[in-house]
Amino acid sequence: MSERSGRVADGGRVRLVIVDDHPVVRDGLRGMFVEQADLEVVGEAEDGERGLAVAVRERPDVVLTDLRMPGLGGAEFIGLLTRRVPSARVLVLTTYDGDDDVLPALTAGAIGYLLKDSPRQEVFRAVRAAAAGETVLSPAVAARVLDRVRAPAPAGLSERERTVLALVARGSTSKEAAAALFISETTVKTHLAHIYTKLGVSDRASAVAAAYDRGLLP
Image (cartoon, rainbow, N blue to C red; front, side, top):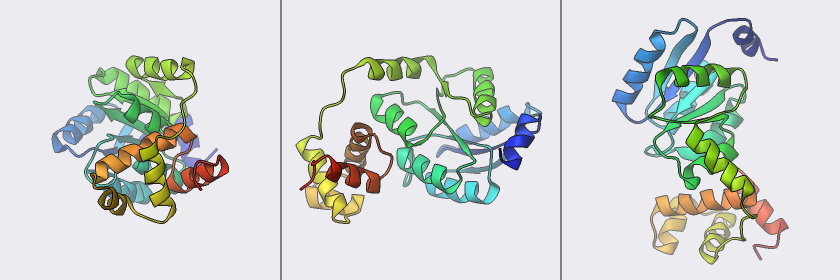
């Protein structure tokens, strides 16, 4: 167990970083946590890129993050964060509860997933649970995960997903792939999220390797 994990387990303060692109949301959350003697906000950021820098610097116990933010966000941010700061637990707090958001976030390494309409006491409990290494899902999200587990195994990649992955395998960025296919960069990232879910991976390199192993790419 790490030194920081030990302090939390012994009743120390849970150190928290908030990542959300809305200043009002960050202010509201920070004000909420001031009321809790055992929860301390040590940093905040408006997007994933800055959030990653803050987390690397502060080494928090928990990162409370939204998903859809300008620039780096969503599963890509979570995947990078869990690799760069493996001691930090990622707890998603967002308004989005669709499969395209929930499953990639959990696959990328988030330990919990809450919706922004959750009562504040539920948020407090979730942060403490995440710091202790416990998985926390809002009821709506838990239902979606169960539905997915009970559903038949996902089909193979669609033709467009294969095309996107082939471009990625050749080294194209999301922006370059979007230009080549005459679609938006956001659409490319959505295709990649679907690919990660279907292949059971959390990043581009793993997706390419898995696709070659399964004969999905020539």
